[in-house]
Length: 121
Figure (cartoon, rainbow, N blue to C red):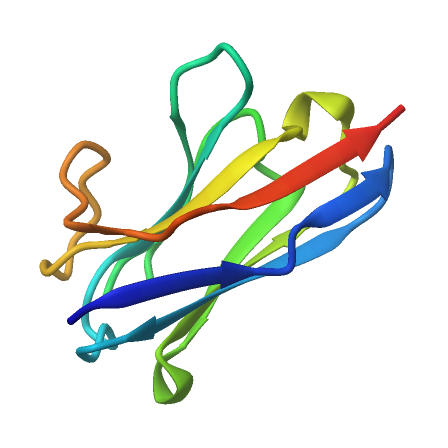
């Protein structure tokens, strides 16, 4: 049974940083695309960042230059380093994984339960 478990969310002041982690179990995702999405209250879930099984990274324009996605294949874990956070980054952040090597924003197969990130002004 595949599980994705996010951690690292919390409350942070504007301008601060947080690092989210997503630990996968049930199968290896070392060659799979993994990504982060977020959903703010009253809004649809949106893409944040992804990393392919080949290590290619993708970012939403709103987080480019502030967020960094990385992975540790030995630990079956993907990270999202977030810096220069603003209140607009407040959302539930979800980890997702694909069976495929390649990122496809609309085709993630597995999802975590989410972790809350709240940025105060």
